[in-house]
Amino acid sequence: MFFKDIPAHENIKRRLRSLADTGKIPHALLFEGTPGVGKFAIARAFAQYIHCTGRGTYDEDSCGECPSCIQHSNMGHIDTIYVFPVLKTDSLTKPTSDDYLPEWVEYIRDRKYMDFDAWTKAIERDKKNPQPITYVNESAALLHKLSFASHGSKFKIVLWWLPEKMNIEAANKLLKLLEEPWEDTIFILVSDKPADILPPFASRLQKNRFRKLADAKVAQILEVEAR
Ligand SMILES: [Zn+2]
Image (cartoon, rainbow, N blue to C red; front, side, top):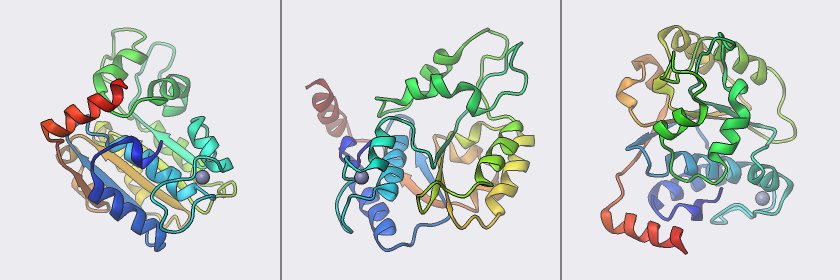
């Protein structure tokens, strides 16, 4: 994903590039705002920009050609970790994001604007637990991944979609993870409803507010997409 793939939020993109170019990326960021404005795509573009080894300082976007960019475009960057809401089923009583990785990769591959209902449909296996959430098991899974050194990148990046969708047990455990001084890890949390994130959690995040897109901008995006 590239910054240029989302033709909006120029101020935020500029700020993110500057954080990366000056080496001042906060340890945990929150991208918050209306659903479907491209927050998660920009988080992905930012991760790719940080990992890109082929761009010059102050380039506007990732190079698209270095091994890191290729891994990002194949959805398999080794130092990028995804956390997202999942469903419990009869056979999957302790689900984590990893259990749904194939569906996730398929879902986000070409998607610039995220949609919780569409994700729910994509992973619906039975009707017993119709609301995907992040369960407490995610904490141990994430801790395990963060305990390894990064595979050649300066930073491991955790892209975490909808942190407001975690149960309280998960929140308490995961909060501890955010409090750890992970020098080689950047957390990017992307939220549609930041008010629903537990306050101690939210207070540890550097906030970036995404504005709703103006109608004219939406029309312009749709036109670009249709080409
Ligand atoms: Zn690159």
